[in-house]
Length: 253
Image (tube, rainbow, N blue to C red; front, side):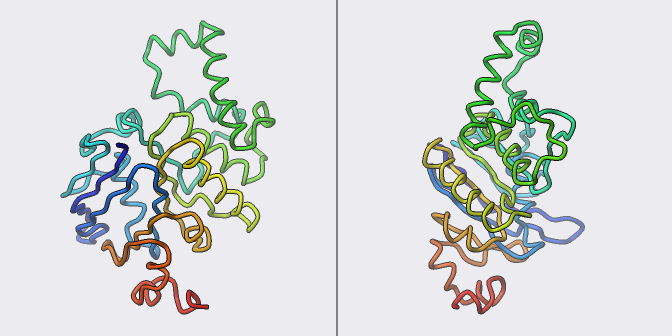
């Protein structure tokens, strides 16, 4: 099933409504994008989904499992992983070890002990990490330290760490932020392949409208915590209020 359901979600901070009665569903196999101006509630919504924030009202369900009040590590075990706009990498670890950090949720205390004493356990985890890194085109960098690596490679490490969790749904927070045009094209290809090749549903927050329009099955536009529009890319692109509030007149150019 692998469907994410957001129902009547409300979240406020000191009287400011970050989310105001937000409802939508992300279906299995979709690339679903959230867009909106800064302060529209996109990051707050992500934080509610993966357990960093607890909404005052509403429901969040994945595969009919209630995620409200769940801790982030519990939500990962339910099949949801996340990347971050601000990289969460450890600079003075290798790329491979940075990716392996994402596998911790699967390890019990016994597994952790076995991993340290058993070369076989370590090799099994490393094989999975290397497979993911190869998928992303960074397998030849596994033993290099992250510090000093190009920003694009560091972004891919962030994605790899989310993928080693074996998610059914991946939340991607501005995956193209800080990237040049060529790197953005590569990210667009990777996002599509995460869905098409790996079979993972994708929920994206992104400001690059060319990227969003090229990869999305559906788009939800947030403004001041409310849903302004939702639909396929062409519908959203031509929605009068979206043009006025977010996209600007150049959307028709």
